[in-house]
Length: 115
Length: 111
Image (cartoon, rainbow over all chains, first blue to last red; front, side):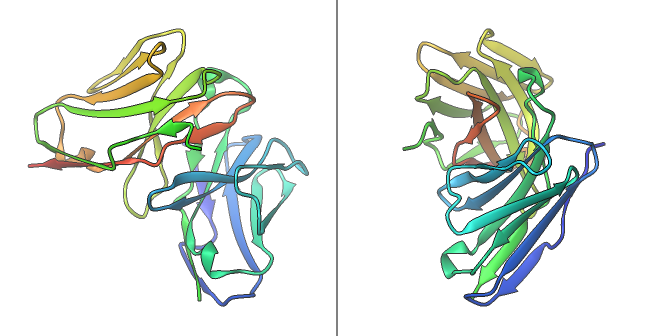
């Protein structure tokens, strides 16, 4: 059974703080993703990674960076949190390449509030 | 520019009846489609998928139909159950594993 865990379910941070969101998967997946979910906007891809040390920008990378030092761990970093980054953050992982395996497994989400 | 559109933000259905959730897409390069289900305070979970070479895929109470010429897919749930109440996301894959999600439709199944 695939398990994707996220370090926190809820976080409250102040504007300007550096924020780390951690994601760990236990199924040896090569692909990992960070999304944010906002009402009326659905799931939007922030960054993704196909391998250790590799990262690709998604649709809304501004204000975020990522780190993938180990295969099982993908971190999302908010260098200087702003109120418009208040959101639900979802991490996901998947097997590589095969179309019929294109299922992403999601973590439970981190609800971040930036004051 | 939304490439995957779910035009109904919400839907209410009586228990036992059919639920039909719709999704339209604009990018003809999409060749694989998925539906995810999301309960509050949980991450989305995979429900059912369909390849562009098919027009129907069935899994128990869930059936997805794909109309490529209309760039339209739909998810049918028969019979609907109260436990099906959730937000349903349509997703499309095109290019190297890039998945584009719709904004979701909130389904409420009334007992």
